[in-house]
Length: 250
Image 1: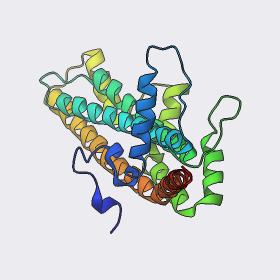
Image 2: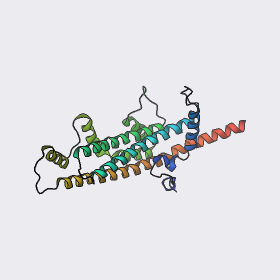
Image 3: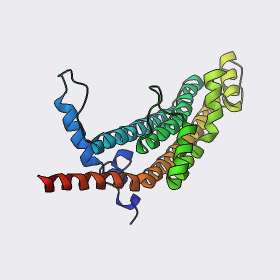
Image 4: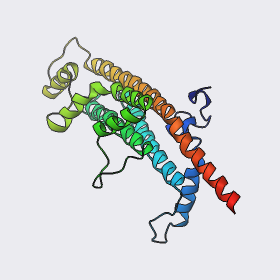
């Protein structure tokens, strides 16, 4: 049976509940208990086993992905509400759509950092390795994970250029949004055209686009976790074996 088929029933939409992480959860819980005991003591270093540190590193990266997906759900909800607004505002739509574009590309970066954590890739001069370096490393070490990571990247690749334009050149726009914004800005006479209906239709299309992308990203990120499951199991089994050996000696 695949890992995907045995997802945890509680909040299945969260990547943190993916069955691929089950083998790491005891080690993460142990790490968190140790860290909790240090709260308020001024001590920052958590004395934990290698498996506990690994589990916390991986699971915290998964939590960052869940945070990003949660933000996309909020964006989709806001844009969906805007599509039903009595006074749809193109500027508000643009704001949310730009947020959507940034979040999509940000999730790709976070997926790469998850893979880096799973592969125990070290930081270089205090910074995490860049995406190209991570892809090169995982390609040589695990073809399945590499393919799954590229699938995540491909899902939102069409937003890479708009994201770069937002950062370096101009605000987001498309033909229909530009025309709509121009008509409203200049207060042109649009006799015979229901401007509000046109705006709502455009925003509804955007809401559907965001929902479709969100669903695809969630599935691809789940597939990435499943591809990494054997790596997680190796860590968990090694920790169990080490604990058993320690008990035998004692």
